[in-house]
Length: 275
Image 1 (cartoon, helix red, strand yellow):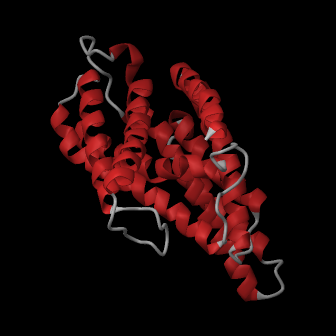
Image 2 (cartoon, one colour):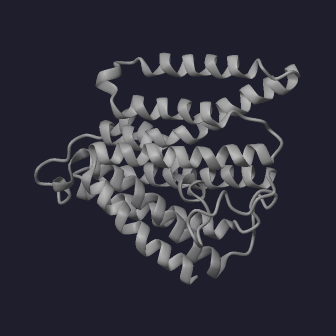
C-alpha cells in the first residue's frame, strides 16, 4: 500500500501537469505511454504463445498516434499509413519458416499495435470536443484540456466507485474466469459514480448534464470492458501484472487499460451527439 501511495503521489501531479500543458506535451506523453504499453502487450502476447514483431508493432502503433496528433497535416492519410504498416508487418512475417507461425506473428503483431494505439482517442477527444462557452465554469481549460479532463475523471470515478461499493457490498461475482474480483455491486457503484462525475464536469464545460444519463454508463461500461480485456490477456499469459515499471501498480498497461476502451467510446458520443 505504501508503494502504491508513493507511486500515485508522483504520477498524479505529472498527469495534471501534462494535461495542463496540453497540445504537444500531451501528444508526446501519449506517444511515450503507447510505446511502453506496446512493450508490455507484446511481452504478454509472447508469454501467451503468440510470436510477435515488437519493434514493427510499436512503430505501427505510433503511426496511429501521429495521425491523431496532427490530423490537419496528414489530412486523412493516417489510414493509408496504417495500411502500409500492416503490409510491412506481413512482409516481415514472411521470414518465419513455418507459414502457420508467420500467420500468427502477423496477426498478433497487428492486434497488439492496434490495441495499444487506442490511446490515440485520448488525443482525438481533445480535438473533437466543442469549445466551452465563455460563461462555463471550466471555460479556462479550453476544449482540449476540458474534454480530456472529463475522460480522466470519468475513468477514475468508475475505478473508485467500483472498488468502494464492491468492497462493501460485493457478493455476486461475474466473469470470474477472467477476473475473480469483479462484482455486480461494484459494477453498479462504478456506473453511478461515473454518471454523477460526468454530469458535474459537463456542467462545468457548459453542456447539459442530461448527457450523463447515457455518457456516464457508456463510459463506465467501456472502462470496465477495457480492464477485463487486459485481464484476459494477462490470464492467457499467466501473468499477474503487465509489468513492474510502477511499484505497487504493475505496468503501464495496467494503468491505461480502462482508457483504451473508454476513450474511443467517449469520443464517438461527443462527435455524434454533443459536437
